[in-house]
Amino acid sequence: MELSESGFRLRQLIEKVIKDHIITHKEYESIIQLATEDGHIDPHEKVLLSTLQDMIESKMVRWSKE
Image 1 (cartoon, rainbow, N blue to C red):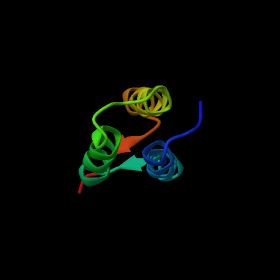
Image 2 (image 1 turned 60 degrees about the horizontal axis):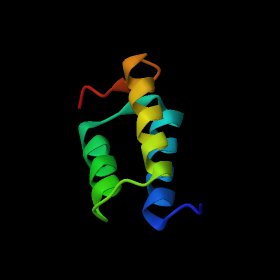
Image 3 (image 1 turned 30 degrees about the vertical axis):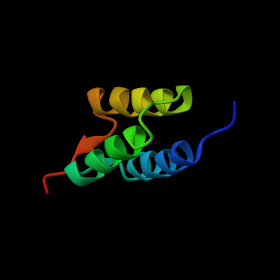
Image 4 (image 1 turned 180 degrees about the vertical axis):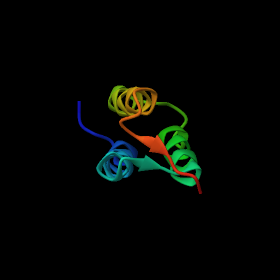
């Protein structure tokens, strides 16, 4: 299965957050909006979202104070 355009853009956003180890509420909203913009979340997007959620829960990625 090929990575969809929205999946590719989602991966770019999530990789930026992982690199920074910080996520803002605006970034999180953008990630959710991008994942749901086409009306369904494909398997690649599910994996990306799950990975991000796990990293937030384990505090590998922290919420920005902004």
